Image (tube, rainbow, N blue to C red; front, side, top):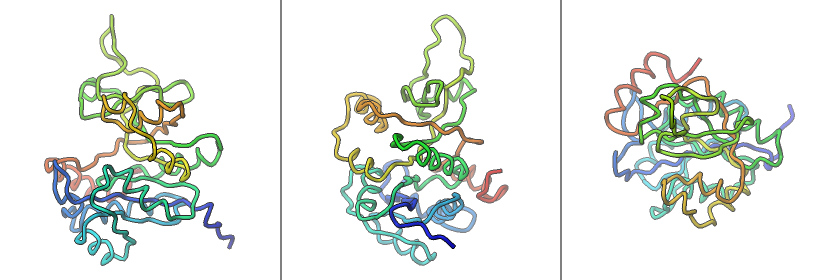
Length: 256
């Protein structure tokens, strides 16, 4: 058996903060008999080619729950400003090539699509970051400011991300267009690029939209959008719990 060198490894880091404003204690809520964060950790291990999965948390209780499940956890400072900073704080000490930032409320992420995003970075040595998108075909979703939209060029590189309905249909009613996706918030970075990204000041576009991926586009770097087979239903609010739990019970955590 040929083992990967540490520098070639792919590590998933799951940021899990206790003090969410909209949903405090969210990582610990029970779904189908076990905490949300454990569902996400299990899902991460379904990504083909993954070498390590780490939960990055600022909370002792989350840390204990993760360790009791046999998973790896790292305590981070409480005052980190974002999930990406929490991921970066852990990643800075790792000897690996690619970091997957998987949100701690995404137990149904398309694991095969994440693997394709990792492959995209492997195949294109100039590519620094990739993420996921599901083709956006419903006007209701297009108008929803809670859904981040992304437009891509013909090579599936992101042109722009927005909470507003883009593109603007000046003379025509809404209809699905090629290159319009619902953005799914998992990021696949080259580790060295992630370290650089976290040193940059937020761009004006990022401050306007509250979308940190715009910091990358503003610097002139490409973000590859990998299409997914299904939308990922995360747990953003207490109202999402029953819907996601029903999906877990119906399908398990596997998307076919």
